[in-house]
Length: 608
Image (cartoon, rainbow, N blue to C red):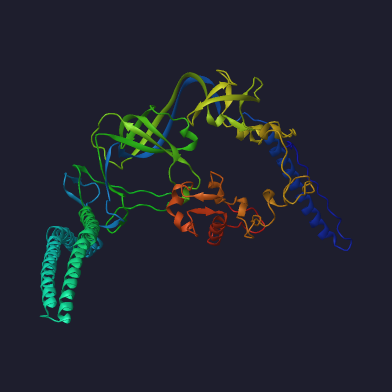
């Protein structure tokens, strides 16, 4: 911006009309003279004020004489006291429950004392129902075991009883048939002699011959029955009885498995019922496990009536002999911290010492009102075992980053940043400010280490922006039109042409739409590919498919981040185990319809 040292103002007046009276003309002339005097005084004042902006007056300057000193670089943050070794008391009820009663926070308990009672009404109902199923399964097992034993006895009964009897009966029938055949043959011989002598008729002889034939048939039938019994009936009956044994055995094993399943369910429910009453695993002080969710949502508050999920920590029993301070360090300072750095801790006026044991590599959950502030949890362990410390106490930790001895330092107010460079203004021998380029080292927000640029004894202006016009300018060099080094900042290559093919851009040569900030007038973003309006203020549209790390065109549950995994089944509308682009677009539309895409104000810059 060019320095302006003068500001001129010209004023002209018209003559009074001839028809006005002389007296009236005199009054107007006096008024005009007064106005001219006032304007002249104002012009002089403006000129003098403009001159003050371009020249430097030493009156009222605050001067800092450069000297060497020790610089203590520390990071100071507030945090809370906690135990380094906690015993977590968790809800072990499957499916979760609700708290009916809980011991007051901060109470001292002994091992075995009752500390939490969870709602067990649903589990008691399940136990009553399960007992019925258990008794039915037990009855079925008893019946199946008896059936199996009977089947085994039946096999033994047949082989050692029924079969032997049937075999003896068959042999008896053979013996009787043989005896009948022998008797019939003797009778036939006697009848033949009688027939030859004429004592019996031919018909009686034929009857006797038929008796012999019948006896032979009966003998053959008895022998066949025995053979069938030995070769077929026995084998068939044994196989049938053995199959019944195997069937009964399988049924018994099935009923036993069902019984064991019902028994395990009953035992598990009884165990769950026992878990509804929680006792202290050791003596100590009780601390509620309250947690803050991400973006201020999903906060966990432990209290009577609150629902608790399975494996959720309800209470903690801290070890008061191992205490530490948890602080949240801003992302601009976290890079300076390392494990082992010493720290000074202030707790309610007590000054303690400790050291950094861990620095988180992921930011802490933030509330909605914190916006995009990123803070990293840092743990400072307290040396020794001081008395009187309680978890939750507010603590201030000052972490020693560096201690620099005998170095040149300047107050941070003396340093001005211009175009990514740092400068200060030193009073020259003629009393005028002279700009010096600085190379900075470490800082503690009050003083900054100067590696080069000033020397001991230099007179540095503490508040250069208040007295030096050059210090108030946005860039060093005043009105010098320096060419923007695009290649130096972005590398080789050219900017892509607009999507509509208008490579020439607007009339002024810039490839951006008309409107503030390169946006179309009206403040709203460009429409998306589905026709929905974009978010206001140039807010980029969130692309869910960027989570597709393996590039297969769909998101699996393993690729989804933690919060998304909890609701993955709800997002997966077709229940195929993946989220494809169509499902992602549908989710984005639903988000925008619910207020996700916030348009900017009309005809102006978009909202924040």
